[in-house]
Image (cartoon, rainbow over all chains, first blue to last red; front, side, top):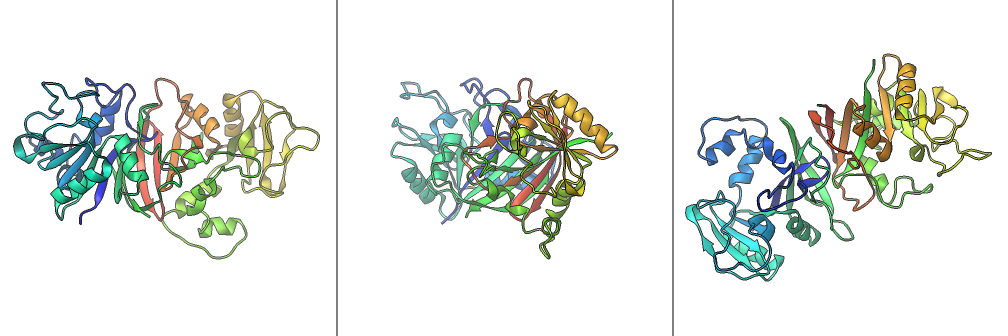
Length: 213
Length: 213
């Protein structure tokens, strides 16, 4: 059975999105700067149909994010479209007709909805019966591959607090957002125990891999 | 002129001390666990008069903390003894008759006090006219050597927000404290800009060096 893993980029002050997240600015103020380690990479550019780009110490981490899983779980806020019922012409995600997942994606929501099949192998399934059910469905869909926890922070916290997260790669950026969505918050007691298994220096980012202790 | 530098150990959720700090438990609940990367090292044990110990990737960072500066600045809370005036039999610090500094230490306080000269070259000077004055005095005392910012979090924040901190080494531990003294908080706007210049994987800790951008 594959691992449930979270690859997430965090500011030095612990945020995975800036303040004032909105539909127009889903990463919040300053949040796009978190991901600037990823954009210049050849691995990222190729997946977006562009030529060239850098190959550096971040490349294996980018490849893992972009193609390392057989299914993804994400929260409703990360899928987008605002809170509440889906409505008659429902939101189809931030990613256009051919999302970069290319595998089944399980969206946690309180509002039921039929699966949304898009191009390139991405189908969004809407799960209303909780994180355990989403994980079970995602594991079944992923087969021997890992399941990626897409985020956001609240969903990550729920899986971490429940002891269901096997691995976290934190890509730590040298930026300060001041406020926003904190990753390691609301974790209950006793706190989850982690073990550091790898740390890699890369341009403008440090990637640190943790597993459940 | 030497740099003003901060070497500080931080939990993965951004705290440099746990909750409920007190005179009996100055690092707060769980806070001692932050520093467990340091205690087994030969460099640390030797300075505390003990034999043996480990030499690993953390050693240069420990040596820098233990002997890398010509003067130290710290806050009143880190010096200890509780808030308010010093009283007739004033607190002499947490470190006994021979503190591990072996150079002048400038303690930020609102309450004046005569310098406290202890064994081994450590004299505590009590500075009541602010962080700029403390830095000026510490730089004069350190000569060509660096000035170490000892902490705690609030003093570090003040120097960082004022643009006076030249370098920060964050030793990031894979622990979650849940609450406590957050290092990168209260930084004002615009936020200080940092540049990552080094990251080193070591047992149970990752050391990341940042300079002012």
